Length: 596
Image (cartoon, rainbow, N blue to C red; front, side, top):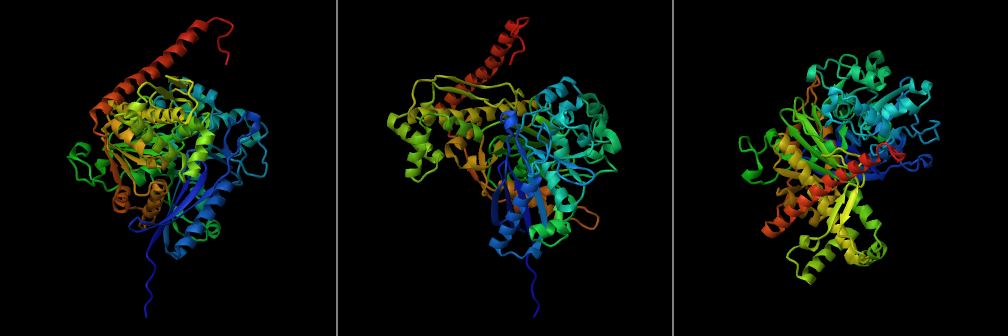
């Protein structure tokens, strides 16, 4: 009797801001098991809670627990796992180049407290002064990051470490984007991803604007990081010939013995080049099987052709929201990061817009309202989460007041929500929130109006970002969502109606990102003896699942209302900048100029 071998499977690993996740998929893309583990976050008190740090040791331990859990719950034999893909937040991880040990990033002493806190989280804004100094150079590479390098990117954080770390410790450092740190731990290789280096570290692919080495020596020397140039940029992964830079899912190497033992897997499993978490969301959503009208497709190509991706905006919504679009040629959009070549599919370009806070914004506006605690108790008594409970209350108020739409309830309330600054398309970290129409209402009704207006702001700003991208040359016709916000029906309806575009909700609402990471594992496993892998789009087309489409409400009155609210939104955005400029000009030459 001949025993049949187990069918092939692939593992995806996703590291978000607060947790690590793992899933197992089969060759059709079906998720067979999913697990999650919280990861630690430190905010050093000495910096007033403005610094955010994590540990690759803690993160890797959480990943190991997740992988062992999905193997156990699925009863899938470890020997059937053919490939593993990683994604992670665009955070900076630091190790010693001589011993590969985690380097603490906690100032002012930079001593290890036993937790290996070697990661500066993406949302850490400690290098504001460094980001301003970098942008003041006006270097040509800045046009590939939307004109300005964000404080959320990694070169400002590296520069902050250079400016604050003891020289002898700095000289021992090497730097990784977190996803690359994880593939390094998994394989022992020093391979870096185009996704990380190009999107967050100022790497310009060879051949773009005459780039020869990828890293721009004059830029690094100009901003005070000339020592990164030494030894062929060894601290950053090297250059062509001494380092290896790969597009998403291309084969990094095999799972090393140490990592295999910790994960509970056989050594040698193919490890794919990782991506930033939002880009895994693009992989896990835009290939979805969905019936769209001709108005929302590229009619010159087949429905499953890669060029259809050019019309689809991936909106990856969690604490913040990233908006990702692909194009065949570079498209430069002020305030939108990119264009980035080769990061997902070789020779194609990606652009990344974003909202600094969406899920966090809704949470903050609710938790700071006087009626929040009592409303949470009511929601719990009703067996609902706070968001479903408030959505039901909005529907109740619509019926009770005989309003023509939920949007009508907020017709005279104007909320602008850039509490954490603006990522796109203004690219101004000094933007803040504003409210017109505030009353003394402390009740649940008052809170639900603020809740609705916060969602309306998110929808209107999504429209602003899409309009900026399309004006510059993109051809976005539909929005492919992922993340927990997909479960909020009122928010999805608002985005569809405000943007006048269909919104696609994926089958795996809460697992689209880790699903995309697993597809990277499948791509790595497809490598032949020369290292050539199956095209990523072909894998996405084969493994993506049908989704649900949310269409614009079709109510002309509601559309007219939201169009008018959009005009007010743009006015609030513009006048805030004008007011700030007017005050700054009035203070010039006074004793108050420059006082924080």
